Image (cartoon, rainbow, N blue to C red; front, side, top):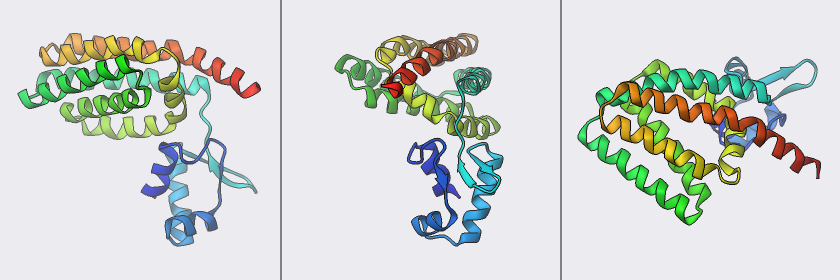
Length: 210
C-alpha cells in the first residue's frame, strides 16, 4: 500500500488515472488481494475513488477542495510552527538557517525545482521539531490529496520570490523562540497559498485549452 500511496502523492499517477488491480499487482510485485486492500484503504484516505462498474481511479481534487485543505493546513501547521519555536534546539536552529540560506540561493539562481524541494524539507523539519505526531498524520493525508495543486503552485512563475520572505519569516520566528510570531508567519504563508491557488488553476486551465 505504501508504494501505491507514494506513486499517487509523488504525482507518478495522474488525477483520474485508472488503477487496475492486475497491472498494479505486476508493477509492485504484490498479490491481487493485497492491492485490493490497499485501494480500499487509499479510498478512505481520499487518494482513490471507486466508480461503480468502472473500478478505481486516482481522485482528482477540485480547486475548492484544495483551498479547504490549505485552510486546515493553516491551522495545523500554525500550531506546529508555534511548538517548533518552543522546542527547537541549537542544532535545529542551525539546520533551519541552512535551509533558509539555500532557499535564497535557489531563488537567486532561478532553481525552481531545488527551491520546491527545500520548501518540502523546511515544512517537514518544522513538523518534526514540533513533535506533533497527530498533526504529522493529518498533514500527510492532506498533502497527499493536494499534491497536484501544490506542484502547479511551485512551478508558477514568480512564486518562489513571493514565498521566500514568508519562509524566512517563519524560520526567523522559530529561531527566536517566538511561538506567536512563528504561528502568525506560518498562517500568513499558507494564506498566501490560498490566495494564489485560483490564479494558478486559471493559468493551468488556459494552458490545457491550447
